[in-house]
Amino acid sequence: MRREHIKSVILTTLVLVSLVLSYSLWSYQPTYDVIENQDYVQKVSIGAKRDFKDIVIPNLLVVHETNKNYVTTRQDNISPIYRALQKAEIKNFENLTNKTSSLSFESITKGKNKIEIIFPTVVPIETLSKVLKLDAKRLQNVLFDRIIITLSTKPDTSARVYFSNEAQNILYEATFDNSSIISSVEKLRDSYHSFTDSVKYKLESGKMIYLPKKPIKLTTMEFLTTDIDVDKLKDAIFSDPSNVRKENSDSGDTYTDGTRLMTVSPLNRSIAFVNPTATENNNNQSPNLLVQRSVDFINAHGGWTDGYILARVRPENNEVSFRLFVNNLPVYNNATLTTSWGVDDIETFKRPLYKFRIQADKKESEIELLSGSQIMEVIANNKSINKSLIKDISLGYETVFDDFKTSINQPYYNRAIQLKPVWIINYGDSYKKIDQDMLSRTGVNIVGLE
Image 1: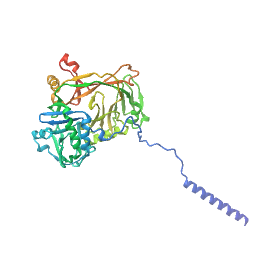
Image 2: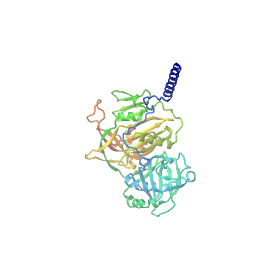
Image 3: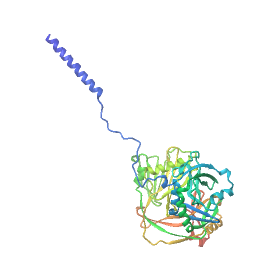
Image 4: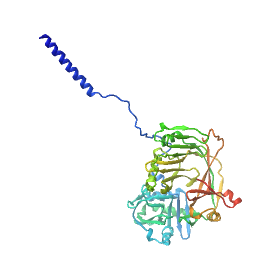
């Protein structure tokens, strides 16, 4: 009897131990090391983030009177009326393109008391809707480069506003309550006679431009600069910077993850990124999508370092460029942030490495630039220029890099950049300057910039 009792106790104990072990096995959760997400999330910022209102900005304002055209590039003249226009609700869009003769088109856009607000490039209507209060949901992939309003101080509740694409003769009419811009118009009336008296010229490409009647005097400026940290750019642009290796060469460093490549040019103080893995898009992407993707890409790494604004939209190349503007004039020669896109990813990205620090405290030299009629004469006398390829002619600055104390071993730190006033021709897909220094010796000299 005693033996049977001992067996029962042992059996019960074994059953209890078995139950405890089984429960422990079932409820066990091992502790694993955390595996990081392979999708690299960049936390790099080399400058600032910006909204569309800081990027989509007009660079020219023209006031039309009878046989007179007054032009200003000063933002303190343009901004008040543009900002006031942003507060107005613009609606009732109507396409007048096929209803308007060329004579009526010019009367509507350049008649007496008309104001043209002109952008550096054509802007998708969807992009403008991010800046202005537009009821334009029915309009898609329409591109405009100027807005026209009437120089009126009457508080009309249904004033007309026009959106135009000059080169393509596209014209849309809309209505808005102009009471919000009355004070801006009144201030403009008081000051526009101080604007530059200009002559309008129609290019063979179809665009109307305005060039000054008299020679223009502008000063050369110099800025001390600093360079953007290349390693930060590497971390921002590559999807997984830990896999990127650096290779040194006399012509400049290169960074690659085996497929993508970022090239650093110390001579031009710029970088060029190429992503061959991006699926090529043989169909043009919508202009609005291109602009949106480009702004998002630059914002993702705080890439706005100076006064860059939307300056070129090329749907045929899936490309968007933002140009540096100084004193309200465009800067040329390594002065753009340029993106091009594949189907799902960025294909190429180019940008300067420098950013302005302070303007140098030194005497600025003044340069007298040719008048509009002189410019047109220079172009007419240059038989190598195909006039149909000229898309625009404008004042701007050329960057001149100071190579003093620069060697191949220490290529780019704290160098000065000079901004020299020049006349610029937008020629085909490139830009050329009119080199006035050579005019007296050779008669005509047109030099490529970028």
